[in-house]
Image 1 (cartoon, rainbow, N blue to C red):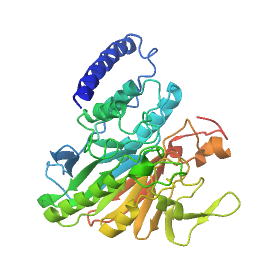
Image 2 (cartoon, rainbow, N blue to C red):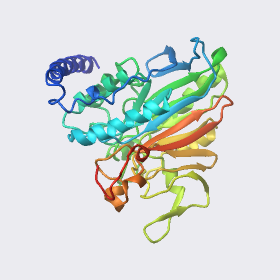
Image 3 (cartoon, rainbow, N blue to C red):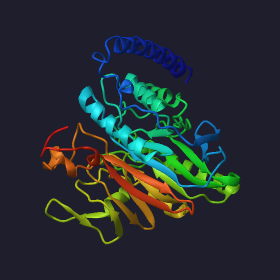
Length: 396
């Protein structure tokens, strides 16, 4: 860990020095050069926040919303979630993606922004992760992130650690490195408090990995011939259960929401294959909104997180990303399974997958309001509402 810290400090110092000179070039030419400096674009406008940090430790942050007088309040608490930016080296697409994202934040004025993975894929991932964090800092809302299957493509190594360390060093980022004994990085929690130090909601964030690895067969009893996307590990499930028990002893059992990148296996039970290449709602779920356009990209190995959710009786909603063109919210066995809408205009969407007009594309954000009475309200907000004079089948 000492090596990580020294290496990370030196690397971040070099990156920030390079960004300093790059910003000088940007200013000197009025933005005509260094066009990939998305943190300097005009769409990055301050929004601000009514949220305050009450307490924090190595894996958790306690926050609260305040009223106009600065007192802790019990009003609606809004979470804006999105996923799969897939920022690459095409600055025009990056600016479209991030410009629409910034506009969604400005209009929704969320109390917390949650990004469920696959943000930066450029050749300069460590640099652009800092640019992204600087952009969010200028917007001025509190935010956090979980890693997706495209972040640095390692399970628990120095480059993934540096990504988590770099973004978490900014004041408005509530992401934590997380406990050392858990799989991956950025496993953390956020506790939302109300008046009288009442715990309103606990948010769990988990690194869901990328692919099944050979060492999982011995460590987690994965069948020898099983291949596919990754899953939440036994120690992450144990952390979830132990943290709920700890909070219960102090505040009573909290209600909670969980965020990850790769969907749980139970997402695949919401829709059935119609036998003709499409999908129809299954009999065991109530669809609140949305459709399924692709197979759920879950792991073939069910590690038991959803069983733990049912057993603990705390978590009422689970959010995932990963599947760019699934946009539904469904009630399954008493738990809301929700997709954070994808922000991606680069890899695949309804335009390049099915030739649909941009007015029907699904990129956007998902708004979740925690109501004063404790209820939840889910609302998809699509980027297409901002796009005028959309041409048929036009690529981003």
